[in-house]
Image 1 (cartoon, one colour):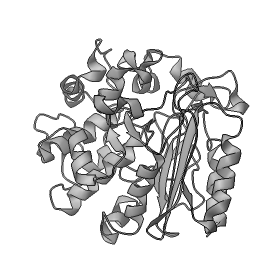
Image 2: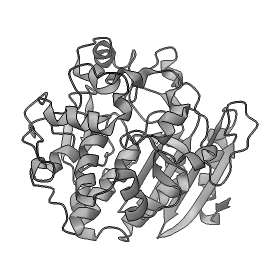
Image 3: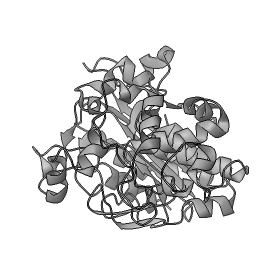
Length: 379
């Protein structure tokens, strides 16, 4: 483990965050182009016998979306992808008249498939991309936005797959080259994954439960939408229905699958490395990154039914997930508490990867606040 003396407040905040909590977690920080914090704590198995180690990874859920976005912008930088081009240029047969930029900014109108998908669809790339290619958008593309919770991965991923000529998981591995970061987890590395216990509600929402984005007393509109089997919100999170299978995220089938919006696996050091390299210009030029992180979708979210902010594939600090004090910070949170972001103004990146999952309808994860506050106090 490592902590630069100048960032000891982050280490102390991490100790306090972990104290008394089950499972394990890791936190990492890049500043000025170098790793300054790399810490982990706790246990990684169901019974609490296997210690969390340097290379323990966890399913980071929607933090995967920022990884996919980075690959898209890398291809744009190379001239392989025109973000303003119609999706059909790269994906013949794609019926919705929308752009690649709209896919990245959650504006394509395709956050869900209307018809209930058959068993096995979640793990069938062709079934999901085929269904989305033929789907009628829920709103006129480009006019509104709504969180493409799971479809984002197949929509953006299929465009990248057609450009790169290989599965998205291979493109992420070979193009981004960040050890400890993968879409899914190769079977040979399954022993590195931490067990994820069933999620519990944040303290102020105890007993309410929720999906990513949440539901409960603090979000009655979202709770009502999640109770309506025909709503766009319910379809976005629960179609294919097998996503609701208890314990699914700990199965070999889930871990080895290619579901780019939600089954990325990483340790904190890997995600902090990715964003740390982004903010210092090692992956994308300043101009390309500047365009990538400009706000594209702001205001009421048609799926989450609250105000959200998105750039081209990256989440921005917003009412529902205020993960950093600088509104120009960019990154993505993940269901249950994973977080990774970069701040180009401060030249920093932070990642937090827990195995103890907590859900809340809105606001920061209670474990983020002390970590983020401690980091900014060090600057």
